[in-house]
Image 1 (cartoon, rainbow, N blue to C red):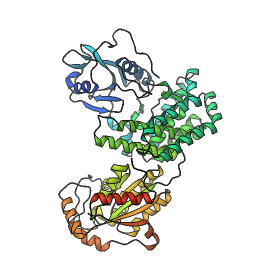
Image 2 (image 1 turned 60 degrees about the vertical axis):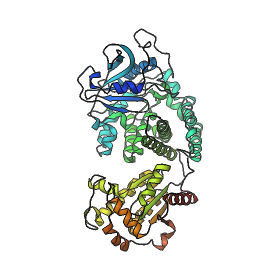
Image 3 (image 1 turned 90 degrees about the vertical axis):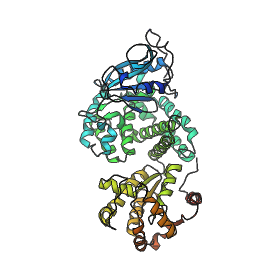
Image 4 (image 1 turned 120 degrees about the horizontal axis):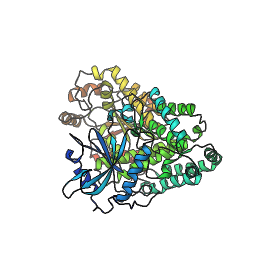
Length: 544
């Protein structure tokens, strides 16, 4: 929803425009702030730059217009800054300190100070970044008790949140369909790049059928007062798990994205927990919220709103991947994130296509990692390296060299078993989201390979084992080169002959799942062979 720009004096509307990047660059100077600052850290999202100063954080909106969001003028950015502080006062009143002008006096850009207003910044109390939701989850510190504390905040928040005819209209099917239709229109250009035509059509058809099949449910939600001015962006990166939790950064820029069914918010956080491989916490969060709120109909809406939220996340990542200010690594990361979320949306929408899992296995130095990385970089596959998993389990730095006698310590049979079990657990979570997975590891015994086969069967995936082979002289040369550089692998020349003697061929009952690939020739030929073979098996979508 685009509102007119403020026209009152002092808005800074007459100030000469300054480039966003130039303003941020100037504000990296600690002297640009009205309080002592030792160091400034710059973070950014697709719509904002955040400057961390130690005592305070300053959020500056980028001059972007995505249709559903318009920060293209100074006046619109001021309006949305003030709206952001107002709305976030509901859940984080002690965090949002106000709106500060960014001024330019002809020589320096400062927060406050003298000169013309060239930008606006939301001033916030800077909290401990270690308590941000994603980090808490990744460290294994997010528990059911902590989610209970969050729910004890959210339930009364929704009960008291603004409602009425002007809010209820955002719970009507036509209003919700406007949002989902917009998502599909805005992502059509990514078909064949970040999402297949088949998956795009399946998600769109499922969404539209849901409206038809659940018309009475949507009407009942309005009648029961379930449509509220919600948070609108409830995910882990917008929650500080302090005591008590602090929920911040709600949507201020568009009422039709902030107002809606309470299930829209709950589905977002549930989806985020699923996406981060904690479906157990996702299920607990929804169950507990229903129990405390008494909202039993929430269950019937969960897949719908999870699909919607996963699709929005994919859309945002896709948009961000086109940001000209990002380097290629950043663009690739966002493309892969978009593929991940599109796959999750497909799963929620009842997609039945079997996801692929390919195991690149074989002797050390034969090219397993190179082929796995190629699928990640060119096709967005998720790669699980057993070398990385092994060191994560052991608490060893991923680039640390661990040279121990054969099958001892980090490479003992017991550690091998733990490593392959954990690798398959991670693969299973990705496969549940419909995502293609490559595992890079030796898998020299049939027992180790059987764990992958069982994982594929459990998660409804198609599995292929690609054994990389090369001439022993080439293998020695590659291992010698590898030892000069930091890599995740600890393979070395003196171990190769013993590993070769102990390598087991596949058993006849599963031999049809195995394919041998020579990596002696040009790498481009090997990659082309791999791609052709995967396409023949229906395990690789069309190229982008």
